[in-house]
Length: 582
Image 1: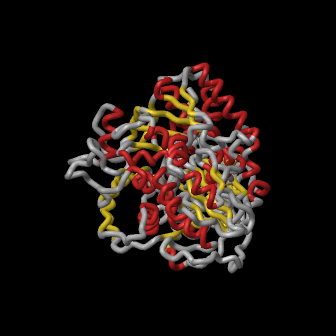
Image 2: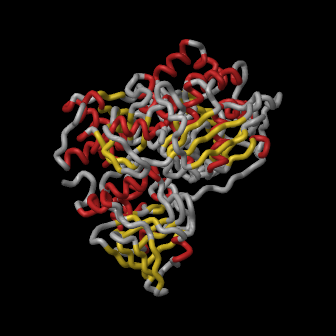
Image 3: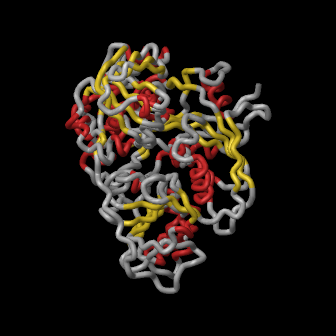
């Protein structure tokens, strides 16, 4: 039987043949920690008296807060700098830009290589046929110390795009169409290979690979010589998507997968626009926006913020006159970095503000308290000039100045955390009948600088509507029950640790986000997967869970059902109190 791309890469980096579902020790070629995750990586290494496996493969990238304008971020950055000096580690400091882009541009990773980062979009390296995965602080600390990490061989989905998109469709429109097909969890726990875009350049490939996380996927690979799947490779499924005459697409606020043609929301009055992020911060994205903005002005009352992905992109924009076009149009240009995805950075919006963004996420509260649409650089630039959502072929001769839509102010809510052994737990159930509860709902990114686990619990579910008071009401030993894809989104460890802080005994869900599942297992937080969990258990039921067998007993109903037991490695990590404990 032939091998998929990810199977070939894993075999190369673990040194032996693998099969679907195997858990292996995966060698990691490039190990990255960012400015918020990096401080916790250093903390984990120091607390466990661990060294650095190979400084030449180990990097810090300061891309979340490249201005260092937040005191806690500045402190974390300095902590990482000092640790880097002590251990001979390269730092891509605040001037350099997004770490995952640098890993490609600076040759830290090449086709067939492996990379992990505290960035949940590390899978953008699938654009060059490399394996990348966002992981939590514990995973990255382990890779810093030992050069490898455990990994489960996932199934692969083959995506075949059919037809020719319309003349105004861009790579962002293509990936939004793919996201519409799969939804927030259609590729959950899977790798994917994409075919039918052989002529697409690196920038476009990065745009598509960068949104794998929003579909629940581990990674989306573009086949790249010499990393190709075998002709007889076995796939979980083959999905064909018709992109013939595809028109510009847009994702409506709150859910990246809520994708419609731009024509359905055209004319919506906007307050601000953003161009940048790891999805659309390349030079080609900047040039496409500049082509529209040249000799035009941003509509009165509209704010346009632009952030190139790296220093080299920023410098090329300067050299080729693109920065001049942006400034004459009335845009704010920031120094390179992640921008709006990090709290307090360029790209955030305020209560009631309607923004059109080239980013990859628009969860409630993710980039401020307003509403966020996701679209291509061309659509965003066109909308900035028009004052309303529009496409590049339909920019009005005069901008729209009146406000036609007043959005509801999005509420800011709260998250939570969990606790310890033995191999069974019993407690009161808190049932959240909701799928795709993301890590921003669990633990908002404005608290990412918190490293003291005792301070995390009070913020659990703070950004989940209707559950803002959870932290005040939950009792030690209680159990959280949720629907599918629990913990999707960012790689933040705090979204697990907040439950540990509160003493939650176990989380039961119908499925978990891939990174969240790793973070929970690695920190010794008990999690159980149970089909139809929110139907079998009601809020307030007394529930007993056996970790070793997966048995779940609803004591209130005298009913029993079978969930997924702890794997051998999960039990070992749990028993010793975490992956880094020895």
